[in-house]
Length: 143
Image (cartoon, rainbow, N blue to C red; front, side, top):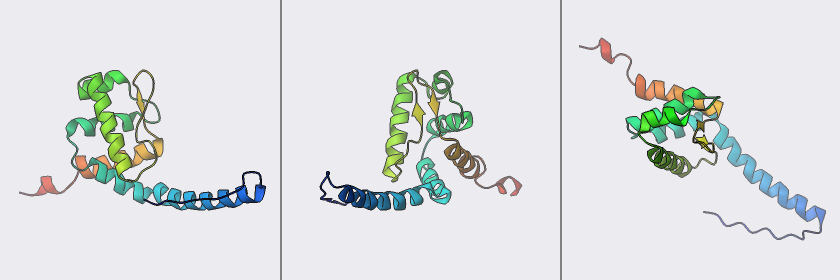
């Protein structure tokens, strides 16, 4: 954790511009690291590692529905109940933040439908295919 103190006179445009420049520079460096698809892919792999079938399928349902939304009814069919969806969603979001991500992994609306950013959904589906569905495509060819 870093503590940063900015001292400025809010009545001076030059002070405001200088403070804004410092914050923008810090924000831009963080945004570049987080928006790199390779970094996001690594974070998704780390997030999915250790998840069981229900959480993985919840994430898959939402990603497959992108750019639309996955209905609450479809998600209940995967998870089991609306209450379980809330706990699953909350746990996934906390884990996503713990990985240093500042964006929302899955958003829900007032009726419980869930949506994921399209670019993130593409990465998630790719990781699910590579890491979960086909982790070793040659395994079926071995005796």
